[in-house]
Length: 455
Image (cartoon, rainbow, N blue to C red; front, side, top):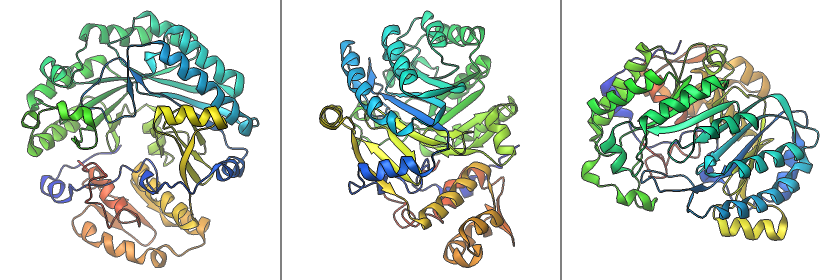
């Protein structure tokens, strides 16, 4: 079990900006030199690997002021039909590269995937089934906004194959909801969760955000008590990063209404303690799960994995991203589609694909990716497997990195032994700082504001 020891002084000391390591190298390193030949070669690199599909649905009915996602705000439902026309072309073009693969995971993200009507979502799922071989045991998940759907939508989603849901709740306090333009019906959320269990959804996840305007320690405790009542299998508790110069919607949030850094830390400490007492296990970063959840079991067995969708049990899996801004992780490369909808449409129109940029990883990138992934997922790193795979002596190869870790060792965040690194209970909340020492791209620029603060 991943216990955490809260050390207030250390958390304040190390609370700088840093990557979230859903990839290494991070998306900041993607470039336009990467082309479709690289993509095709990457798709052929590991032909027997299972495939995970990520589909991006960019549309939302309303703007949530805090949101930093790639989205299009519109009430014109027919725009989703146009999008699906283009998405179908991209799917048909890409699917031929993966005809020998089996899909073991599908995730629809956004935006708001439940923006799609029953007819539209059925059409999209049919596209995927027609073009890919999908395992009967596949994890098929969708992100939901509880404000704009009917209860009957859950039954429809279950009928077309979804077996997992993730719902954005953010906060149950009405004043906070008004301040972020996200007012929602609490009773309906309880009804959705109950109906999801009745319909046999295998896993439920709720998203919360701390650091939103008007939040206090007391108001967030109110939210947490409601959440524990809802009893989801997993929870994500994200830190709100206020970057109004980058995200226009955030300019509608009044700076003076934001909780102070000290209040944010108190909310986080309280959240961790309360959730652990309520039977949830800290998985890492912002994620919690019940001890019998497969994420917790995978972590206990040292096989937890992390990609652009967060923590996952799908370890040896290539990821194909479809739709505007979607990112793929194929072989030892990353690839990202056009981020703007007009550019996405124009590219698919002319080429059948919308590849914009990417990165071919060097052997050194792959080595450091595996080191960072082991630390951020499992809080420990045995040297032997890395040394054998990459034919290195760990301590010699990473001499400079281990020197950078020395002050963190002194502060008790981790231990470095002859054959492994182990992150302490004190260091688990600061795992991004530890990973930063192995990140040759970001560690020199970590204080720049491309990244959110660690806590």
